[in-house]
Length: 409
Image 1 (cartoon, rainbow, N blue to C red):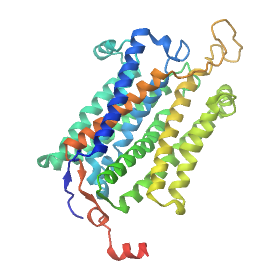
Image 2 (image 1 turned 90 degrees about the vertical axis):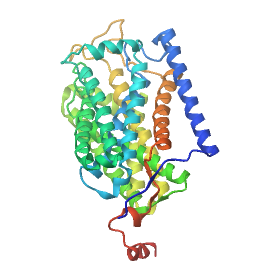
Image 3 (image 1 turned 180 degrees about the horizontal axis):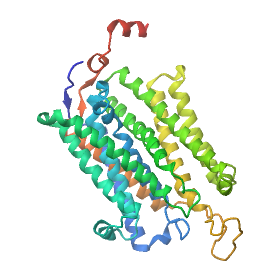
Image 4 (image 1 turned 30 degrees about the horizontal axis):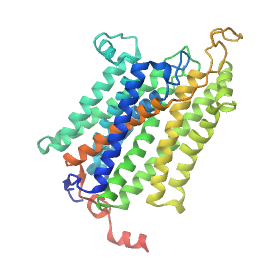
């Protein structure tokens, strides 16, 4: 296995500047959407006093969860000593930081009073999972950036495995904390479940790897660099395993709820209701985000790079549907103020609260996504993150010319 030669992106083509212009346009519209909502108040959005976490939170939580999973390639190379993934470990770390930055930016700008974040950062409530997550997010930035430094600075390469272990453990804690935000909300029957914490960890593996695979294949295709089949096959297999794991946790979550009589109302609302949440669950989360990607990944007739690209895109779309059903659907279902009793009043008691995202909310979310992609491209342009070649004979320790010829035949 040869030592890879890292190079920056040249970034001189017309396509490169067009891509940057598109990203900056999305960032500008996202900033404009924030100013519009900040000036007029949240009444101009689809949110209300029943649905207080709207589409920006769907974007934000998805990006935060995906940030943990994007670090998976670096963790596999450092913690589990898989040399095939080692050349892409720096890019994995940068992508993780960029996704977390984009997600937190959306979250902060959706607070209504973003300047009050200073209060949350200086006055901690140890019983609040939100306070704990502020520490987890800041710690993730610090640890991953140190980990990246150890990988890029030759003098400190020998410490990269230790830093990688800390980053691996911290990302598990971070995603557990993100899942616990919902799992600890006992007032909401849809959220009150300890299984949401490990579920979010597995979801992160699938989301992060899907985004990472698209970034890698796009970067190597657009720059004309060589990307071998060995790495593509490994990413395809990993993606299939993570998607299968995600489906497993979704099934366990709903089967567990069906076991408890008090949760039957919510399960009927999600699994067999007459709202768009049921359609998003079955068609978006299960079919688009789960079953079809599994078919594309494991069916031999779909063993192509194009199928991996399509599967990754579908996993991302299914992930957004999953977050929408989890976050918005959990708030839409009525609060069980008196379990076993029918509560009716003029204040929406016992009523399903539907939600329609407004354009400013969507633009703010897309702006955060654009920020994350822009940071990754900026880093690839100014740092030596991408190996000049990822050909099989250069990165695969088990590469055999004879076996390659036989496989091609």
